[in-house]
Image (cartoon, rainbow, N blue to C red; front, side, top):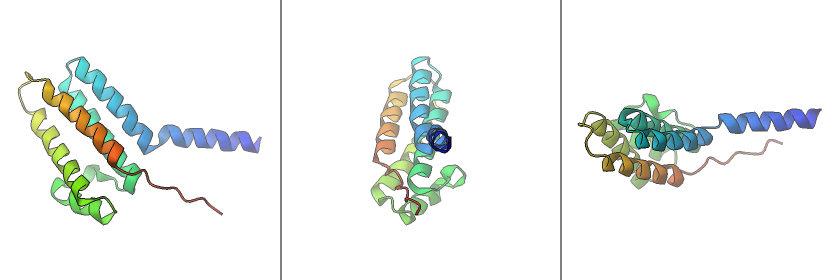
Length: 130
């Protein structure tokens, strides 16, 4: 009974994990982009990158100003180059949100960039409890 409880708890943690949320958000973004729902696509991409940041650093980045985000990320061990890519990504998402919806290649480019960022952000190593 105890082993089943442990297994159930591990599955529950996995389902709720930030990294899983990032993966699901990217999948959702691709679906929204295919349906022509640009704003939903961009929101899902932002969610994916924020979830990945949290998985990598423990930082809840949604409430941090873009101007301060790069510094916060580098303080938590993310390379300055990757931190700048993250900040640029969020800026481009915001800019595209207010552009006329004629060019779908920009949304596709942002999907690829989000996938690279999520892949490049390290997954935080969990310590085994004694």
